[in-house]
Image 1 (cartoon, rainbow, N blue to C red):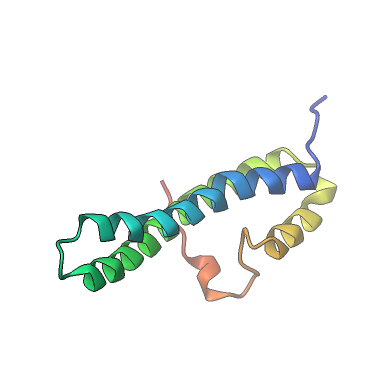
Image 2 (cartoon, rainbow, N blue to C red):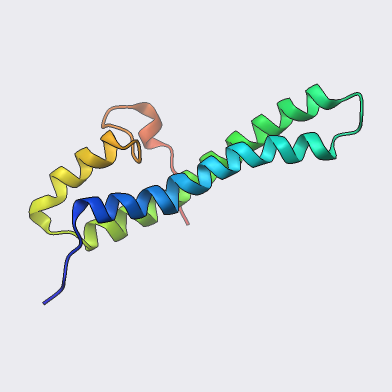
Length: 108
């Protein structure tokens, strides 16, 4: 018999594996962009860093969230799936149904 994880364990893993890297990407890319931008173009470098950071973070999220969702549903009881989905929405791991952004994913 398979040992299932609790909803809080699955959500915590999602926060670490999905949202953790997103926060790092969004914070680190503009800083690195500023550091490599020639003097006199710092503003443009920071702006481009934010744009690139957003694109990279969104790409990571949209790839990793699919993998996490599969893992999460495989590792929780079927009777908990509704609660898992709602908690993932509450913890800002996934978008609520009907939000146009919930349809944008990068698949393998």
